Amino acid sequence: MTERLYEIVPAQPEDAYAIQIVRAEGWYEQYGSLPGIDAAWIDGQISRIKSAASVGKRAKAIAESSNPDARDFCRVARLALGNKIVGFVDARKLDDGGQEVHSIHIADGYRGQGIGQALMDAAHMWFDPRQPAFLDVAQGNHRAQAFYKRKSNKYTPAGYIYNFEQLGMMRMERRAHA
Image 1 (cartoon, rainbow, N blue to C red):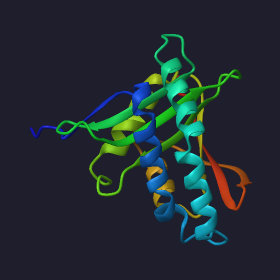
Image 2: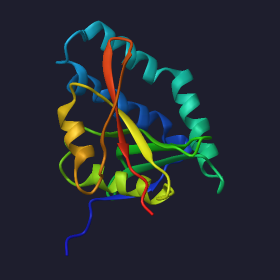
Image 3: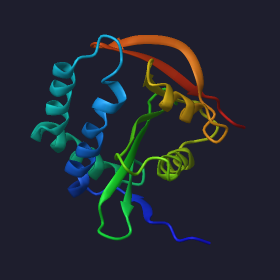
Image 4: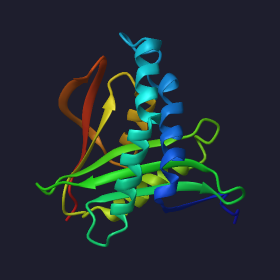
């Protein structure tokens, strides 16, 4: 059996900046070739994500997620050597009983190694299996959609489409399991 080069652990408030960097770095790859998306718009999103206000908001949410009754969940994939964060997932339990995978990102160079699936599995284990879950994904991000549709994740298109500024988005659902 091979040893994992990373571990999935609860995020700490001091991880907020590294999480925002992983999130920002994927924007060009994930959205840069989509219709209607230009580099200036992506640059603006990246500046917002990396801003002190955004990092502070993320750190506060992470701190609150350590409460046993928390409605927010954040896990990171941390390299065993060097302690570098190479991915993260954050999820939420909503007041109406719904559950959302809010975001999941893996750093360039670390995709295809099972990190994304390990992070999704962690979120799914935190969710109540008796309640449905959802996530939103860019309509043109077919790679991410295929990942969410995998047998291990079980998300299907929900038929809800909307725009986040210039980015066309679609909702995917995971049915509740008895």
